[in-house]
Image (cartoon, rainbow, N blue to C red; front, side, top):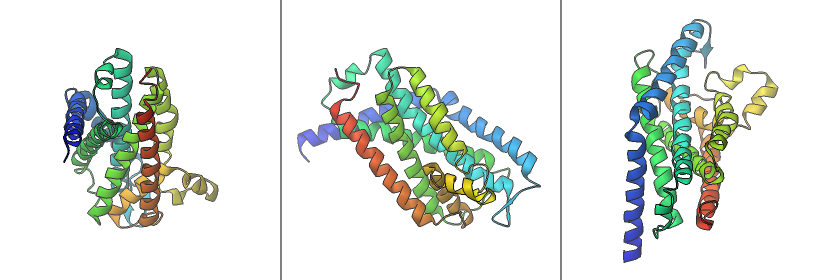
Length: 259
């Protein structure tokens, strides 16, 4: 390995460590609070609908709900990690300390997205641990669970990076999250199977990329899903490749971070 490659690797590792430490130092807010929110959703929806809704024929509603809440937490927190970190650095002015380093755009991408994946998975694992006692959802195929959890967190970490590069103030990040990320997450089948919807809304749901992440993730728990997990995997992987290419190009150009 050349000296330049070794330096880039070390720099990416250091930036990754800094990003992980950034959210872990306030873990009560960044980890515990999202876990509590997911538990509240479970208590409210599970209590109201458990005796009235059966999914996939035999799966209880509370058990069905848990994987959706886990993945919703993973997606939202992975996005929040990279987007909030980058916009905060831009506004406070400490981004200049990264700009003067010879880190490549690959190093930036790996560090920011890698830390987002870590935060998303930590929160998701916390939700599983806490909600497991209410209704164990089963474990039909762990490989699907791992694959979609990693890809889902990577996609949202990358999307958060793009949003952080684009935004110039916190209001823009909040608008991006409230008017795009939140609705797409809630309408992706977290709280219901799309097969319970009329045909028109089933078609609309198939246009939502978050649906494939959550549906494939559920496949790992129950062994059944609304669409083929291989189709979901292909679409999700393709979405990550496209978003990663966009993010890397923006970083290479120094979009809105270099004058």
